[in-house]
Image (tube, rainbow, N blue to C red; front, side, top):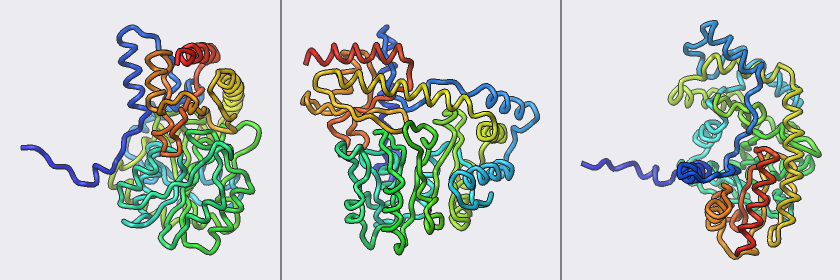
Length: 389
């Protein structure tokens, strides 16, 4: 007997980063040396003080169930952090802790979007956005992020895409996969468009601390927007805590109550020792975070200069996150073909831009969360491989 799955399962997509990682690992198993620039994961370890706090909490017995929305202490600390950094008062009841940032995407779309509702999302963008919109029966409406605009939304184009069916707009700044950022003026213009509309904003701010020449702005800080914004944030990128699976959402209390029901019905709760480590990450010394961001800046400058020195490649300098999104159209290969070519011929694992949406075709994503030495090697090996085309 074969099991027939529900139709909705055909609407869920995979995340290409893990597919490419598997291909790279298979090549490594044959003895090939592969430089991993495909995974969006800081190469730095979790800071020592954060690890120590997690161990201390485990040894103190914090290995049991916790409240589904998170420990009150953790939620209060996050509420204070958001209040301070976003400029409006947040209460602990507005915070929901989750196992990483992804569940906030899933829960928010599941809680807000009905079948047939339209959701505007960035393209190229994190592929889970479109996947979950499709899964719940919503209608994905891509807003193109174009190279000539430094991969920022065109606000007039965004306005033209809004209809009476639009239920949600997803913003990600700094942005994956391009490193583009919306300016403070961009945010103000979006807020003006939404002022009289009943549209929820899902603001993915997971890369908020990894910025270079400017600072990240949250649309929630603009008067009138906190009431209609769900902030997605977490600890994976800023504090190298990808394996701790620690994220959170900040939202109006009514939505928080409903999203908490989704936590109850899925993962139950987040580990107490993880939450104690999160508190230490936010309230402890930030010197290490600043040092790492500076290292990312130096790596960014090196990889952008190196890629732009290769005939046929064009690479915009990103303003945040730790990705570059070079244009590969000169070579006449699809982004998937180019990613496979560079893996097999250059020994460098990258991701096809097309996996981040149709407007990502003609580009590849490269993570510079790797050492300066490996970035130098990767540039040399990419240049050699491309010279053979």
